[in-house]
Image (cartoon, rainbow, N blue to C red; front, side):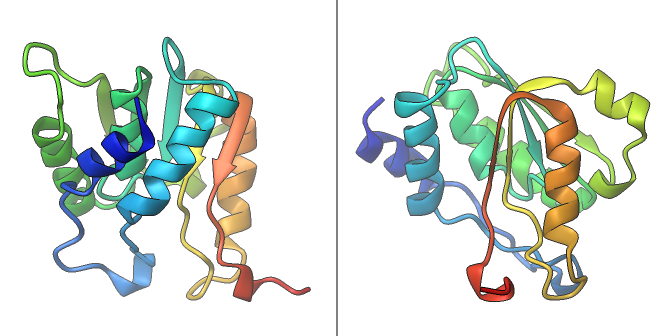
Length: 166
């Protein structure tokens, strides 16, 4: 799929209606999501036939995009309101009307997944746009620790550079 086509599809993803500041909910913009997903699909592992876990999936833009590109996706988020939007986006964003996007959602706290649960969640790729740590310092690094315990091939994560020591 061409980058412009993926970006065009993702621009219709419904964002947070009332983001929860304490959860550092930020919508992953279509431009960013499409560029990351397109790079993974064309320069790295690719998505066709892979399993992907989207940690802290929020409204689901990264997961929806990965599913459009051929992955089976499991989106995990602590917030039931975010998951409701993600589920709506899964239904609305499907470019193939005769076949549902392969995305499942689970409500769970990423930081409290047991080691046994992490083992059961093994996936080829983990993608995440974690909380940046403006409310709870280091939470983005905790997401990375969880992601590295789940991914068998690669972890792709967005971070806010201004919150890192240089």
